[in-house]
Length: 143
Image 1: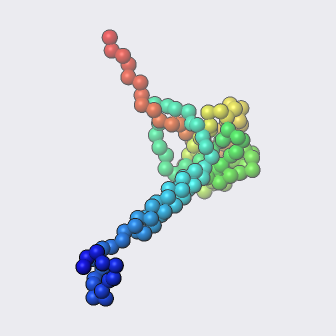
Image 2: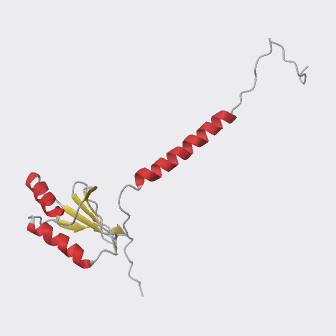
Image 3: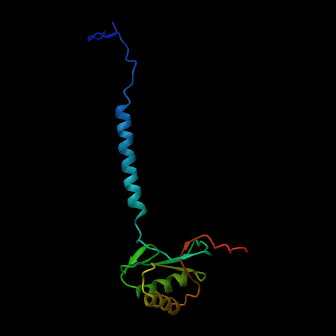
């Protein structure tokens, strides 16, 4: 009988319980979401200026100036902005066509950016660009 409490030894299990599979899948999904968030937020939070004309540069000497005073060169924190001079000089000695991209938060003081520019110029760097957040260009209104 189908509804009996006793099960015969010869009866085959015809249903698969997928509840544990769904539970494990959801737990793994949550773990991946949390770790992806941690991995993507390794850098300093920046609010870059916006510009309609911007290009991407693959191999460059990257400098990040954060609002809280933190400085990173090629993704590594440095003690102060003055350390940029030695790092830029060494990198320029290895690669004469080196390009520097400065990504400064919008709230960084102007004198700090100028100080970094001055350090780069003293180190012999002549190819300097600023990182921006691209925005669509404005279309002139037609009359």
